[in-house]
Image (cartoon, rainbow over all chains, first blue to last red; front, side):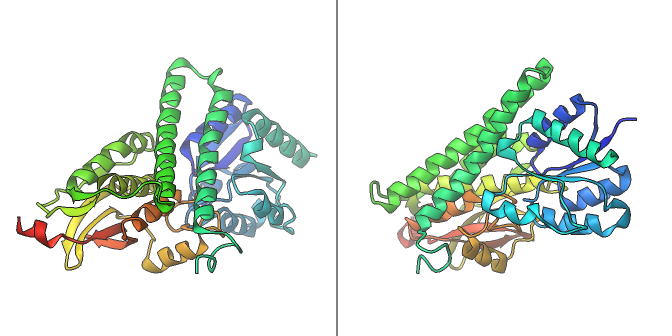
Length: 129
Length: 241
């Protein structure tokens, strides 16, 4: 069975580009544009991993993170942050304590679509072990 | 006063430049990621994506031009050309210019049936550039919303003059949020987080352009919608014509 990636990305064009790359690598991709949609999609599709943009209008990615991790059954699901936030804003997210823990923090400007697929594979593999 | 609400020693001009560079970074990101993927897309998808990248790039180019114009005005390398201006025609032009971008993001643009309004004395280009830059932010905000509400370009008369603005039914924007946005501008990567996730450069470019004609953006309401607009004083002499 294909593993499911929940991609929370407000920009539809970027979501489509990253999403297609992940599909090519054999994943089922569910896209959400907002934090609220993300929680609903997680509930409906039970993802194996979440790729999250922190920078969203209204309820931002950090709020999603708190809500998502508040459910015990989702606490061990890897979350990869893929964001446009500038470098100096990122360091505070890299070392969040459990259960908020993030698997990896990636900058969009440095993360090709292929690299994201590799990171997703690595995070899922680490979880499987 | 200029340094009160930003990083130390950061001027409004520097804040605007940083905000613009953030916005352009996003466009370059789209182009780069598209270039990576283009080869593996089916031809029909590739054509659609090319069109999308073109529309987004054109919109960013317009914003860059508007930004450059605001800089020239601020440094008095150019000056406003004041003449009688029909606001409804400007709103039409702004809406038309944004239509390709709106189509990409599936956002409906509407132009209110503006009643015959007295022309205002203003600079045609500055007003049009300000309204287009502003509209761009609203298009991007709607693009991120769960349900896309139509955007409305409208002008109406108040006791203070003619208010030209962009409105939506779906916004958490309030006067307080807008005031805070101005305060956070330069400090936060999302100064107007109630409106859009990005740097909202268009709002601040519009602000800078309007400043050169002694006008200012403000929260505005129109037929139950909320938005941002500018009040343009009516020229008494034109009113008599």
